[in-house]
Image (cartoon, rainbow, N blue to C red; front, side):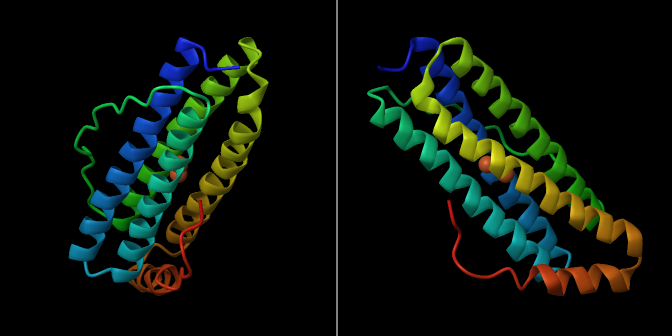
Length: 167
Ligand SMILES: [Fe+2]
Ligand SMILES: [Fe+2]
């Protein structure tokens, strides 16, 4: 079964959103680097890379289903940051928007009885739980400490995020 035009549009919008998230994380990475926090900057950069892999998963899926990929416009990230905590709060807000969008896509898939899309969307649903939880933990840690020393400790810790980005 090929994608309905409505689903094709929704999947395309999700591709754009994932790349928008990647762009936004890239902006936050640059800002954190200028604040002298290379560990956090590197974490955001990896997060950005990961978002592009999410976009590509959806991109390939649309093509595999015989659909047309239409890439949407990505706005410049408009995030004004004053503290590292601001960056992680903005990150959590963004992840929550993505989660809402994935849930909307899932609802549409169910309504359309497009069962072939469910395994992919199940993966995204689980991924969003993990992403929100990870960012929430960083926010909690930053809020708990609240001083420059804590920021440095967390910067060093986040700099340890290693390995390759997994889709
Ligand atoms: Fe994502
Ligand atoms: Fe994400």
